Length: 207
Image 1 (cartoon, helix red, strand yellow):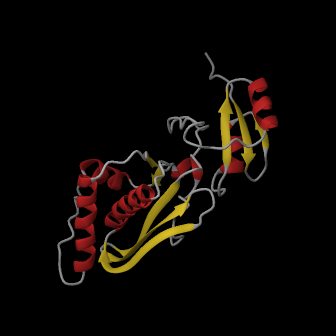
Image 2 (cartoon, rainbow, N blue to C red):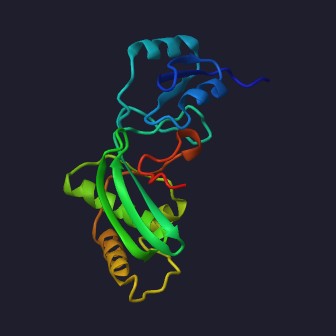
């Protein structure tokens, strides 16, 4: 039995329209900033969706599908966080941006000695605190599996040892862990699908 035909609607991409294969759709959206697209099971559904115009990709209205489904899309009403580190350990900084526009919301560093994992973890916690202060329950995106694991454990499992150079960073790390234990949050923290969507909007562009 052959694979079921799907139809891909691209509202924002290099070219917009309805595409009959994932490979054709991927050419329009992969690496395209703020690409908006979704798969449909039937052509009439796709035609209707495309004619209706770009939907508001918000938490309440769009289901984020499993990463195995090429039609899944990021929730644009969200923030994205990332870190950059020159060496490991090395000079590290992190930031958070509006996913849909790339507008920077916060940035910390550079710290003279850190790791990218520490930066990714701190960025998530900073993002959660930023949203909690503003009473916003929108998602936070990260491209770091390690930081997601540390967030779940509420503990940064870093091998970086404290010293005079990284003292300020280690204090900040301790405060982040304490914040996680002292607070609750409703914001989903989600894994950014770099393969399908391109680099996370908070990326520093230094690869």
